[in-house]
Image (cartoon, rainbow, N blue to C red; front, side):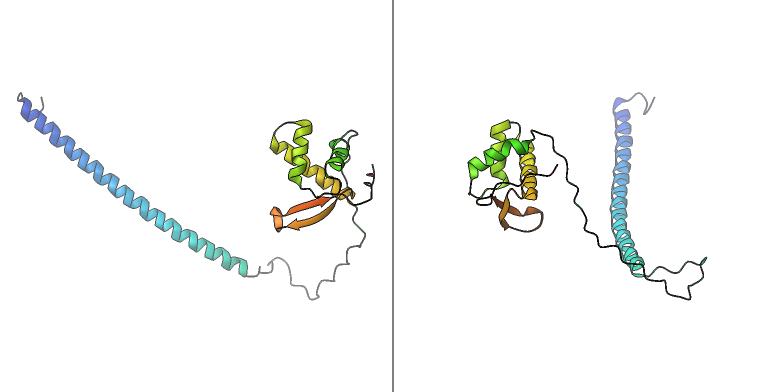
Length: 181
């Protein structure tokens, strides 16, 4: 029996042993935390060094291949690519598509007024329901198709890049050009 038959002595020995183990465990935890912090700082330094080495390697020109003899003549210039106009491949639409359904509604609603994609989104939601996100993408696609066909023109643009907001308008006194099929 630990500490003999005396309960107080036994309890004192057990408590002393447990306190010693707790102190050793706390010291180990503290040491490991310090080691983790040191490793984190070392990782940051090494990442900076790797980034610097990558930048240096990108700046150095690639050496010629050792298996190939250097050329005595400069390579002949390549012929210029033919300058034929690139034809834009248009998507085929099904008959009765949203374009044919919404074009008369858009003309009736806006006429000669300017409108945005958000306005067309509201009309798509009224006509077909659903959620706003899907209606916005449908309206955006519809407006892009109409602009591509020449049925509407861009009246103004605000902003730059991906956040550019456009205002559209139907051309005055003209009907939309039929889309080639």
